[in-house]
Image (cartoon, rainbow, N blue to C red; front, side, top):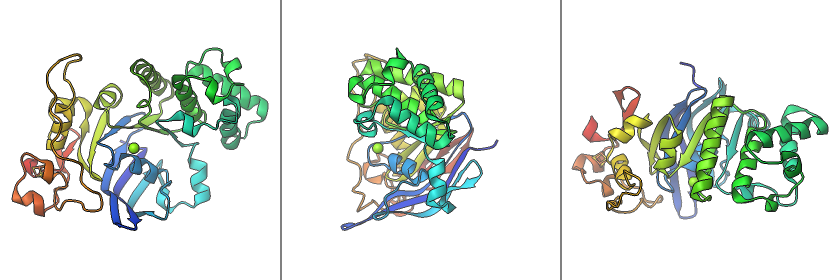
Length: 321
Ligand code: SF4
Ligand code: MG
């Protein structure tokens, strides 16, 4: 089937004073129209760098996309000029972040910020743009939208601000939305409401979503498919339900063991032993080998590549060769 986004052998490195950080090291994935892909892994695994690479927002220096292909809607994003990229960002590809307060400008009203994006990308006049902004606020469930449109970010609660961010991200009807830990800063009740809203919008608007999170609960709730990242590489990929039922990679197994299986269950959780590797000194071979209970000599020498296990499942582990 036709893919909206295809990422092939993506490598994004950072050249720091202390050495080279291979933040993304040969990552492959794709997203179909209307699909929600989850990207999961511990902090520093390369999830956010992946989305910033696709948006071409890696600060250079110190960062650089070293290699790979990014094809979005038939276009080669890595061959585009900065001016062409600006037309795509916020228009065809949008992004929402964890902390809406840092992405909303405190000195402008909600309406100013929403209409700015709408005017920029859709060529609407102020009156049409304000009307569209109010419609967007209504769509994301903000009560009294024609009043709220004149308020400032600090006058809204955290949950309401995140709704405004979603309204901004969706105001240009993007084909693809990156959501990077969109609910992490919110309390559990608000978090559930925001996820519900995103699911509803996805159904109504048909937007493809890439949901980036360390939270497997969010993945279970939202994603159709998931890629599991570890130390800059994809270690497992597949449909969410299959991976939850039968993880093929020891790291995925570890992640699943570290969350309670039944809500409220008192069972002791088993965190994954060891720590994430120092990015300036990545382990040889399989980067998970210092933490893996099944490690063999081969794992320390050779890099396991993703193996196709059928039914959309892929795994990078010698146990599955
Ligand atoms: Fe563990 Fe080896 Fe598999 Fe890596 S390749 S996950 S070290 S068994
Ligand atoms: Mg991050």
